[in-house]
Length: 435
Image (tube, rainbow, N blue to C red; front, side, top):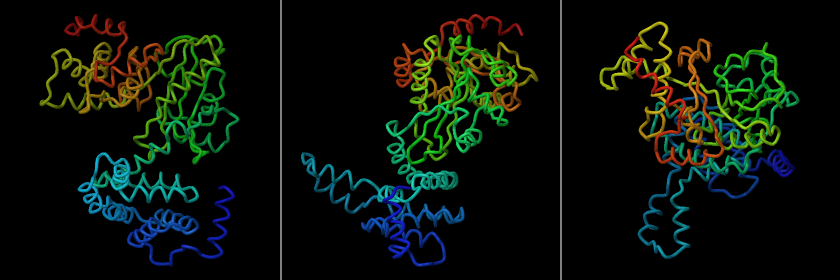
């Protein structure tokens, strides 16, 4: 906390400026404080009210929070009468009127959140508030309109210009290292020895983005293995008994885990910036490394296949239908069928927006990578087997064509795929009826 905030705190504590009277804690009282916050302009008063609101919100029950959000949506919406009058009198050639109109269109809740952000640890508290809102939306989808305000503000507050890239190593504070262990979402970190291998081994790197308002909270991090070849399995990378190589003998950087740490930053995209900056950092350190690939899970593949296999309402080409049946109905799926099915799933199955339905594929293809190789038996962890039969994919980041690939994918053109992989898949089609 800076000296200015310390001074305001002392004033508030001595004089009780803006301090709400003690009432039974409920959503109605909290809404009243929110109305006071957006209507007052004294700095010490605003500071005290914002601090009280955030503290009181944190003390609400889950049901009270839901009621609070519902009231907030209704009472802190757009000023419709003023907007209607402004639109009626609008002179489209008047720049001043257009800018006033922009202000009128903004719901009052956005100004409320901006003022709440001025409290000590305001940003962190607002992230927790959005986490609560996202949980409420599951049962009350009408609250999505309120979430738009969080999304809009967070995309501004967490834009790339504010983020700081740090390499995490064994000298990083224990507080941050513990959070890396906690937030790892792809390959669990079993203990401190496992963590040390990932951040301190000569052929490993781990980088994270931080924000000035959350100095000890990683927002997203990426784990990198420096290797002599493109890997076809995650197991040697995670195996602590494998001896590290001299990183100066490596020619390939493998991004084997990317973890978003803050649930409340859903919809705020900075993963692509992270990859690009990490590529730049590695190139500075190791001139010999020319190849950048991922080793990524095919999240949800098995669930999707079983859903299709049990449905009679969706038609697929006969060869794909047979591959789906083969993978789902046998205890051990035919590996050729599994490879073909994965290829089809990643390249052909889209969501309603025309994007790859697989979130990992969408992320990398949207960043300009191409589907490079598909590996069966790439992860023998039971969770991975249950999720995708242990299949993993290399996405290739070819720096010469990432911009072109990104543009093509954004325009809903077919995703970029290695010609060798396509040829391999096509060459095995004739074997479909042989098993």
